[in-house]
Every structure is written in C-alpha cells, then in structure tokens.
Length: 160
Image (tube, rainbow, N blue to C red; front, top):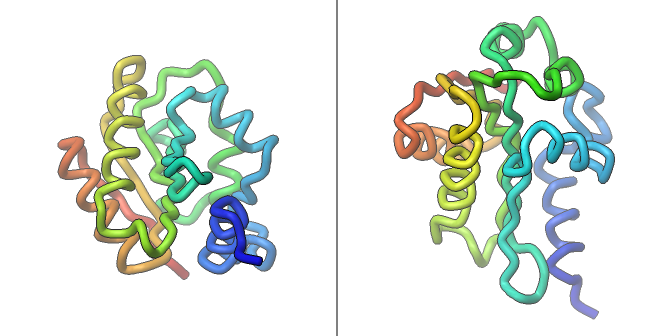
C-alpha cells in the first residue's frame, strides 16, 4: 500500500534533517507547532492538494539579537526557538524549514507559502531581516529567492 502524503512528508523531514541524530536541531512535534502558532499564526504554513500535505514551510519570528547569536554559532536552532520570547516585537524571521514532495517541486509553492507568511508577520512586526540555515542547494536558492521577493536582507548560518 502506498504511503499517504502526510507519511511521505514525515519521511522526507526525517531524511533531510535527521533531527534524531542532531540534538541541536529543532525536533518539530505537536508541542513545537503549538508554540510556533503562539509566536505568530503564520509561522506554520501548509499546502494540501486535497489528499494531504505536499508542502510545509516553518518561519520563526524572533529578534535580531537572537538571530546574530544563531548566525555566529553562539546558540543552536533549538536554543533559538526556546529563547525566542512570546508576545515580543519581532524584527527578524528565521526561515526554519521548507519541505515539498518531489512531484510538487519547482512550482513556486515554497515561495508562495513563505511570501504569504512574511506578509502576515510583517503586518504586526517590524521585520528587518531574514535568516536561514540551509541543508541543500535548493534551500539556499529558495532562501535567496524569498529574501529578494520580501526585499529583506538574508543572513545565512553555514551548515557544519
């Protein structure tokens, strides 16, 4: 029996990020999703083709101070999330992750989800910068494209 879209998305996340073997990464579960939604309702985006999710985009609104600590490797991804205060004035946005099932790639889904999330977050917060920690060449290109579209500077933490 074929895997559902949701099962394939979970499998893809496991393959790409391998969070079980890297405790410094944010292990996204229902508790993390709930907190992300408290930071801002647009922090979690999904595209569903009618048969379940085919794309997920996670953006974490935070502060430039925490962004700089993350970029400079003073804190890890999990610490960035844990240290981000709720109900604050956010001025930076972490492009945390974007996953798209292979047959849906190169259709602009990630860019559309991210642009919508950024627009909604910017309506309430003075976002001055985006930052990312890309795990693939596609991640680098997507982050750059999203930053150009949002007309915001992009800072990148290099992969180990």
